[in-house]
Length: 225
Ligand code: GLP
Image: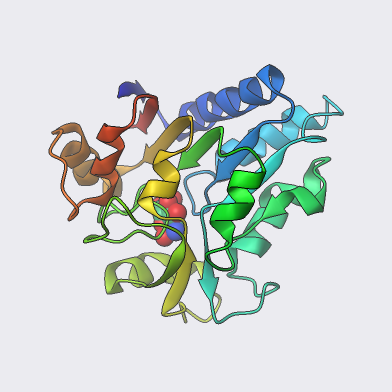
């Protein structure tokens, strides 16, 4: 695992955006695994700013989001579909047909048909979750519907206008994520510090899903103080 600590959230966003854009420059047909949540917002802002200058940025890029809520319409203000449109897709030249959200086990086949995940960005839950793989998730897990923990629902309540966070979500599994050729984990702020220290300890346990990343050969962790 390659660790990088940066001064603040702006620096984290800048580094993450550079890595994403370098990935597209290296391979304009790259397949990206993309996160939602508060952490990647600054990365997307910088990517959008850069791509309004570079016209063909996302023309041939394919994306697979990590997760989505179940039981709310796609257009709901709290959905990850809405999040991705607001923060990235509506502002770049991506073909909507090349953007994907998990909708069932067939998601794994769609990822495979696109050539597999090339570069995947992850946020980190305060309880160590990655995507919506909550504590206790086996490292062999695949795309499936999961019940969200109370910890996660409380953490995400402010992202729902009425604080009514869905009870279920659909998420890529740990095994799905680990098949990405390259992974970048982003963590910023005091409420992630304990989780980052636990990850850094190197102990791999299903009780702390992010620790499965130690199995992967090409993980870059960017931490903002
Ligand atoms: C959410 C998402 C995760 C995200 C995490 C951290 O529950 N499903 O993919 O990484 O929580 O979110 P934030 O960046 O808002 O702290």
